Image 1 (cartoon, helix red, strand yellow):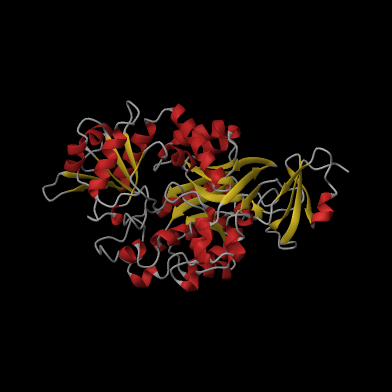
Image 2 (cartoon, one colour):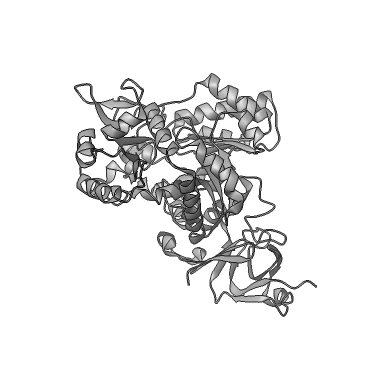
Length: 513
């Protein structure tokens, strides 16, 4: 018998394996799970050099999988100026002034996590206000959803955005207000991101890796590049991901199928955006926004453009995913997926839809029939559900229909969980709580289903269910140890559970102690 390198025992071990859901011990050898079962049976694998890890009644799970992370951006934001806790424009201006002193030379001052709905004034700052606090340095303030921003005059000058570009907001006199949406926002984000040096990107990835480990995440889907970010993010991750302590699955957010194939990638897309966001009123809806009936959002691809891209990628055997929030965007994407499968049949394509926030029942049933993976972010309900931002933008009746997790599962579709970090924190426990405490009780799911979203379902979403996502013999020894058993914790207290250890292939990479 080969002796184990590491044995966990004396704890609650939740395996996510339906045939063997709870055990008392697990052994790891050479990074792989060697044995799973009752304590005495597993302890037979202990030898003179085996490390015995007494869980002392704590709970061990498969390492969490975050299925939607803007990984490089998450790390870079840790190096930006955080506006997420500001309650007024005065707070915003004070934090920006302090942050400008720490900004690296020859780069934009980057304000991140801005949310005007959380401010007393309920609005973006004007370009005049930003010029008054920062006349000489280029200043860019990114809204929390990344779909709109505000800039000062120095930044607008460097971005070389024509005043007539779509998305340049103007005041009554026809002058730019400094707020940029849609196409202008894409240009602004690309300009800012392209100025960031590679060394800073590497530092950002190191920071993001440690953030993930602290949250119990051992693998994640990294959605990088494209119009909302920078292709330099994707290129840097592709080059350096083998050096990271966690596993990353790169989704390159470009329309260039040839480039994806040349790099040997198996998937394309991510936040290749079909529409925008509810917060910025750019998510594409069938009906106008409740708080601004002049708009029903934006579709960024024509049907013809989307078909060309999807058909080519589908024929090449790639896994495909797009960002689609509103019902109008979801309808467009599902229709094209259906057409691709009808014209070019493929088994087990596992195409995805990112966000899937406002689908109809018909959309859900069609997604289930196609085997399309619904990649959702349940923390959105925690932050914006019910009478929050969803209610403001959509009205009470439509806000009660957002993120219908229960219906998605009941219809047989695959539901996987992510954070959309940097939009919300990489924190699977917060996402699990969001799924359990949905503002509309009819959309809530069970704790077991929520845990599966961030473990075995996440593995399935990238064709990795045979290697990770559950505690079974032969799979990777990736685990998270929690201070409390989530199955026995009140739903509203899940976020208070602490990650005590994160183990990657049998090695403890994070310890709270």
